Structures are given as structure tokens and as C-alpha cells.
Length: 308
Image (cartoon, rainbow, N blue to C red; front, side, top):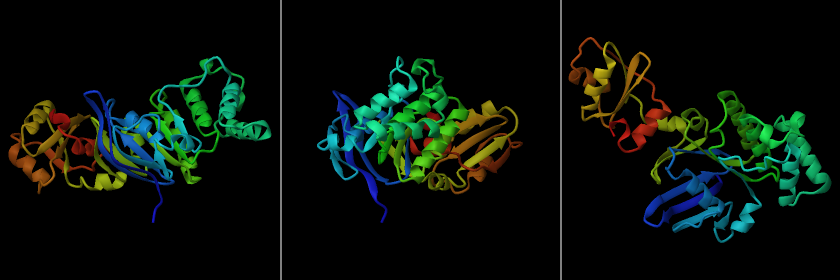
């Protein structure tokens, strides 16, 4: 049986009359990369802060690495690393000074601290800039420094809150390769993102909207569930075709991508292309089934979608 690193049952958090998270259930396997996918305001950060013990749930139960949270949050902190969305290290310290300071916070000292810092300087390509102030680093360099610091004490579990929101695609790809190295070594990683391509890299994925868990599972399983529900339409006046398609009761969303229109049909539509051929007025259109994307999964999992 797969070991569960994080278990949450009926997890909720209210801020006055505002419901940030409502009745979320999670079972996150150890040693995997588990993703939270959702827009700003979907509850990703609030859930992470509750799982870390930084925020007390309004209701529900949480066990992380076998510890009850928030009751045993202090013991948990020695086992986890946390990389926030906003760069949270010290701009007026150099790379190595930041690492030395955080090593002391984690109780690392002397030869152990030096050996660990030296290893991370090489692993995250920071050695040549070890004496550079954090304020003088690029977004990708600061990201690598933040990840190095978050893993200084070799945590069992790593929380990453939208860690790549301020870096370019090349640095994002390299960052994810580093995450897979950590996962391969046994670290459990929970990462929040609003990038579809990043979410597809995760072993498991939870889709969040307005504080509710709308869907979860392995990305490939979520994609397979939409088989034969996505249709690509090519032809003339696609903007008018989109408007017409969105008036059909079985169409969940329609969005133009380049020279074709992608239409997502609702669950239970027996023949997606046949349905559209029958109800769209332009008989010259070319219709064909298309492979589902994670964007289609997100729209199918959340209420409204493009129709809103």
C-alpha cells in the first residue's frame, strides 16, 4: 500500500463571512509531486498554509507525515521545506550569507553546514555567484537560491507556492528537472501553479476553484476521461461559429486556437462531432475529434467555464 504523506478530511477555512476553503479532502502519496492547479483566489495558498501549520483550519482534520496539524506543527517544521511565491530571503545578504544564516536557523553548523552549502551551490549552479547580493540576481537565479535554501535541512516534504511565477520558460523547465531529482530521491513535493504545462508534469493533480476541490487524479487519467468530448472545427468566420456553438445546451466551452475552434462537449454527449454537425448552421465546416488538453480538463471540472 502506498504511504500517505498528507491526509486532510473536510478541511475548511473561513475569514469572517468569506469562505476561502470549503470541505477539501486530500490523500497525497509519499514520494510524488502533487500539484494544486487553480487561478488566484482558488484557495491554493490557504490550503498550503494550513497543511504547514501556519494557519489554523476553521474545521476538519489534518495529518502530515504522521503528525496532527496544527497541534504538532512545531515538530513538523523540522521535516518540511517551504518556498513562498514571493522571494523571502534577504536582498542585502549574499548567496552564501543567506544560506549560512538559514543553515543556523535549521540547526546546521560547522563542517555539516559547510558541506551541505557546498553541495547545494554546485547542485543549483550558484557557486560562481556565491558572493553576489540577492538583490543583484535575476528571477531564475533567485528561484534557484530559494529552492536551495528550502532544501538545506534535507526535508522529507517540500511545499512550493507558485514557485515559477516570475521566471522565463527555460528556467521553469530547469526548475522542474530539479524537482524530479528531489522526488526521485524520495522527497514528497506539493506545488501550486496556474500554468497548465506545469500541472501536467505532476504525478497527481488537484483542481481548485473558489476554495472547492473540483477534481483530482493523475493528469493522464483526467485527460482520458474527456476522450471524444473535444472537437476541433476549421472553416470560415470562427468567431460567429463560436457564438453559435455556445448557445447549444451540450456545449460546455468553445475557444479559438489559431486557425481552429476547440469545442468541449458536456459529459454524456454520445456523438460529439455528429451533434455539432446537426446543430451548427454552416455545413462547410470541418469537424474532427481532438485530443483533450489540461485546459479542457480544467474547464470541464469547474462550473461555468467559457460559458460564464
